[in-house]
Amino acid sequence: MKGMEGTPSLAGPDLQVRSFLSSLGGVDPEGMTEPERVAAVSALEALKGAAAAAQARLTAAAVVDREALGEDSRSVRADIALARKCSPTLADQHVGVAKALVSEMPETMAALTRGELSERRAGILVRETACLSAEHRAEVDKQLAATMTSLGDKALAGAARRAGAALDAESLAERNRRAVASRRMSVRPAVDGMAWLSILGPMKDVIGAHVALTAEEARRHVIDPTLSPQAWAAAAAAAEADTRGKGAWLADRALELLSGRAKDQPQPVEVNLVMTDKVLLPAAFDGQTPDDDVAVIPGWGPIPGEEARTHIADLLDSQTQTWIRRLFTDPTGRDLVALDSQRRRFQGGLRKFLQLRDPTCRVPWCDAPAIEGDHVQPVHDGGGTTGANAGGLCKRHNQIKEEVGWYFAVRSTGLDGTGPHGIRIQTPTGRVHDSTAPPILGEGWIAPSLEDEPVPDAWMLDAEIHEMPLPEDPWGGWIPDPPDDFGLNAENPWAA
Image 1 (cartoon, helix red, strand yellow):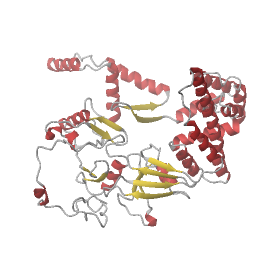
Image 2 (cartoon, rainbow, N blue to C red):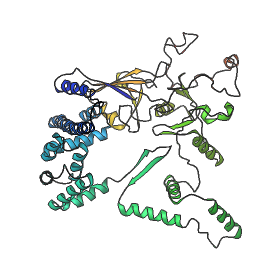
Image 3 (cartoon, rainbow, N blue to C red):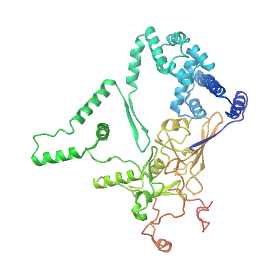
Image 4 (spheres, rainbow, N blue to C red):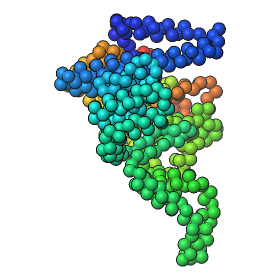
């Protein structure tokens, strides 16, 4: 878990809601008839809509009050994101929907409050009328009042668009202009070590790119007749050996073009693959692959160990520059405490350490990439540039952290073997959230059993290791000093 939360003292509506929430735990399907169970499900669905309406009223009031004072609402929006256990981007969408429902769409708000409309469907109406003026949006809301609770999602969206177009044809053109301005590319993890790469762009450009790729795929088995006999035979053999289907070929070719690779060239761009020595080199452990034969791309997810080894072998075969960097964990293998800086000069070592430990923003429920290396305790307050005082944040939360009322503090360093790096966050409303750094091998990692672990074929006695000369300050000064009592326990130097 990246985050845990606490709340201020309960009072008023908060206490009432939480008391009712506790009573829902007593809903027991045993002894109920099927009609009673279905009726209860329907009632709970209505309750969800009514709760969403209450959330919308509270959200809109919090943001509007802050904006009425001429203040930036980013801080309260971030607080709302934590309260709703969602990302700031999703919270912005909730805020936009809430403000529209409260101030411009009374019929939709009333249906939501009665539990006759779901939060998702209310959001559809808000989205499809976003380009209309407040007056026209209210008119569409009024026109659809009789049917909004009975239409399906697709029909509801179509009805809102059609009603809006009848009132303001220019709104359709405005929707298109806004859509073009929102073109973007995104990446998201998929199952089984895969990922989705999506491009949202103007239809003519996207279709044009697809047609060009498809045309190239149709020609992939066509061999140039002007080739010499030897070249023609080699091309024919290569074409016969290529057994990929059309979809696989198109995906491979698109990725090659986007990354600037030649055909069949391995990926040359730096991609961090984190794995144990047993996953990387099973031959050194009697050829046994571990039960947890998995590598991790920090921030994205796991891939099979066999696929990671194959990728590294392909890089080596193609003479692509490849680096192996040692990562040092605590005795449990969970938490990153240091890394080998021989990959390059000592400059930037702490930055790489932070990128590996905190691949995504450390604020709970924010999955944005951690592109900012932040001092948890600010430098102007005496905070040092160390691994213990470092935290990975997205750009937005790095700015919100400086707003009045936000407090960040290091709860545990993650470098002394007593547990992972921990940060405590307090919001302007007094809510407290704890953030814990994820395991270096990814969330869901389970500590391996120490029993019957394979031992490397080549090993040295402890006495021989102690006789090896050690370089002075191998970390170049960036790794933080150990605590004063570190190593006092001779039997277990990691003990607190």
